[in-house]
Image 1 (cartoon, rainbow, N blue to C red):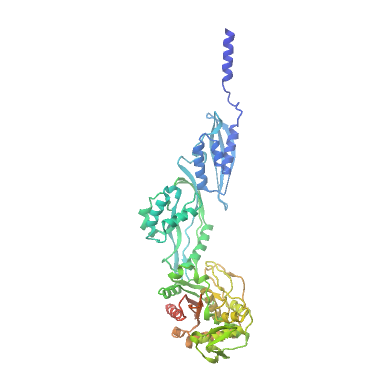
Image 2: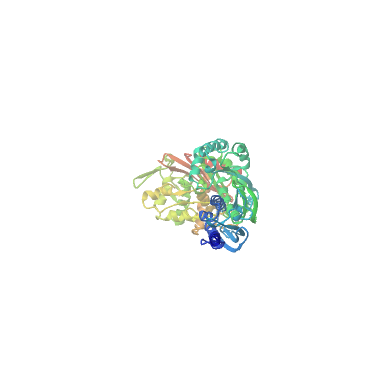
Amino acid sequence: MLASRIMVGLTALLLVPVAGCSTGPSEKDVATSFVNAVAAGDVAGAAAQTNNPDAARRTLEKVREDLAPTASHATLGQVTENEQGASAKFDLSWDFGEGKVWRYTSTMQLAEESEGWKVLWAPSVVHPKLQAGQTLAFSEVMPAPGPVTGSEGKQLMAPEPVVTVSFDGQEAGDAPRVAGQLADALRQVDPEITQKSIMDGVGKTPPGQPYQVITLRQADFDKVRSRIYDLPGLRFPTQMRLLASERGYASQVLAGVSKKVDEQVKANAGWQVAVADTKGNEISKLHTVAEKPVPPTSVTLSDQTQRAAEQALDPVPQPAMIVAMRPSNGEVLAVAQNDPADAQGPMALSGQYPPGSTFKMITGAAALESGKVRVDTPVECPPKKVFDGMTLPNDKEFDLGRVPLHTAFAASCNTTFAQLSVDMPDDALPKTAKKLGIGVDFDMPGATTITGKVTNAETVTQHAANGIGQGKVLASPFGMALAASSVANGSMPTPTLMRGQQTTSDGNPEKLSPAAMDQLRSMMREVVTGGTARGLAGAGEVHGKTGTAQYGDGKRAHGWFVGYRDDVAFAVLLTDAGASGPAVDVAKKFLDGI
């Protein structure tokens, strides 16, 4: 009987589990697996090492989404036993790129459960200050951009708060319904935003990222705030942006300047990591690197010249533009477009149009440079002329007969300048055009520009058409303003927009000879005193050239005037104007304003 009791007692003792005798992974193994999975971005693997995988996965996914690191690293430290089981310290670092690294030490508790050792899950495992319902969020801290001042020292742009309306379709629930409500509210500040445009934008945005619907000035946001602030799925981050003093002022050129300033802002940005709620609202800062101030930006734009150009263009119904620059140093003084042109983009800087008879500046310069003609050389100006089967007429087929070259230039005789081109080598016009800047490719900080393109003539008809700025000749208002600057200056100036930032180009063209340049200037003056631009005769000592440039089926034409007065060179283009007269009228208003 006693022996039986002894055996029962021994059996009972054998059934009692002994700590430390588990055959599964040790507490150190589990801690190592956890930190390695966190560092590798293996959210599911890290969560599986915890006693609450679902809660751990949700928190770890949200933290990783809001920190968005380029890399992360973890190192397990000392593992010590305690009353709960074990405690492990680990060092965690989040790398956000460009030298932005955040390091700290955290602690996890582990306990041995029926399935083996597990990390006792709590948000504080990720960071000691993280609590339930919270996340960690990385953000850059942008410095306020410095103001932009023009050549007279007047402030053209200043930093102002703007609000970005961001839409998260997943958070919205019924996304189409919310998008419709948002579009209805935004219609008063931007009629082009529709329910469809919002949903299209959401569809093209990567998963997990909100779609940026619109960025509004603070005053415009205040108009719609009450109607959109409580809509689900919307966020309204605010930041400082450079804005012009008036909506639309020099928009096509200041937009490029603003982008360059944004690069400086980005380079000088600070950054921070904060505890935030799940909607992104900051609760407390954990780590901060201060931003650096951005210095003011000075541009060459002249407020007086810019406003004169814009006011001259405002009444024009079709797309119209003016570019003005200083011949003596290439400083861009104005880039103006009316609303119809703005709708097409920065056409003044990079739009490509046939320059028409303004290109006779180049044809005339090439002929004068060859030495075969001078300004007083007699030339034929018949009403029309046939070039290898192509009939080319003068405007309304006027007939001057035999006249000096300067007279044919002032009257803009097509037949004369087509013949001059035919008589020159195939590459004469491209070479001369480059000497005046057309065809030179510039990298000008603050603006993307295309001066134009002039190719070698390969046939008689192409020679004739190119000689009067038709055929395969294209130029932008910027390019033609540069050509006028080159004539005024005696050689091509390098255009600049942002002071302290150098413009580079793909070549350094040769100069026209002083003799050819002087003769070209005299012919351009006669255009105003007794030629096709007599409407500018009372506007000071203006030199220039008119141009009517056919396009499409040849039944429609653009109107040009290109010229200079004193140290201001400019190009005026009115698309689909039908003739050069309206461009001359706009040039007169522009010159009167400066």
